[in-house]
Length: 228
Image 1 (cartoon, helix red, strand yellow):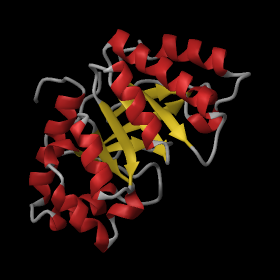
Image 2 (cartoon, rainbow, N blue to C red; image 1 turned 180 degrees about the vertical axis):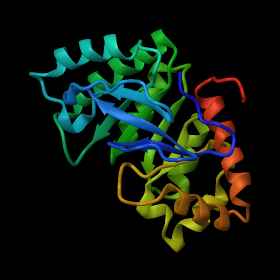
Image 3 (cartoon, helix red, strand yellow; image 1 turned 90 degrees about the vertical axis):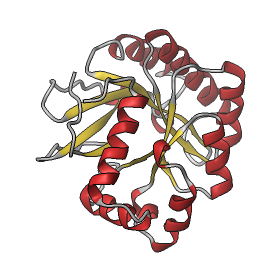
Image 4 (cartoon, rainbow, N blue to C red; image 1 turned 180 degrees about the horizontal axis):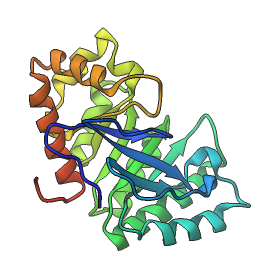
């Protein structure tokens, strides 16, 4: 199993990314893509059903695929999975499929990476009802402090949308949150994760190395790895 090393920049959510010297990436594979790359240095993987590419005709096939593939050792989380009110199938199909992936996560004891667009009520409702033991990470977060607080109270972690976190106005939210619940990402966009770390470290009045150490600790906690 590939793991980040001390001093690495961790890009917690990537599509089609390539690792670089000193950068560890978590590549998000989606069931509809039907691809499973070979193990390579500097990369770990998640696998799940993205709500954009879900429909009633492919649901059964994709769930079977998730059931099988997430058990592989280099797949370290289920997802991205979740809710999107702007795109995708019915709310009911999204909810059912998300719950199925949560149950798989609980069975295999791997955490969940979440996509959520205007579906916070649904997400919190499922979390309240299922009471999962495995941790959840909301990727691409760009909400307000009140929403962030709600998610943190439920034990979730947050990774920030790269465009949002690079804006000056994100500094207030960053300073209001505990650093032991945050991650950073590029989502596969043409942006350097090192620049994101630099901006966030400056907002938090931390050195880059301090932020890297904090996020590595979060990674090891979230994925239940022993500290390196």
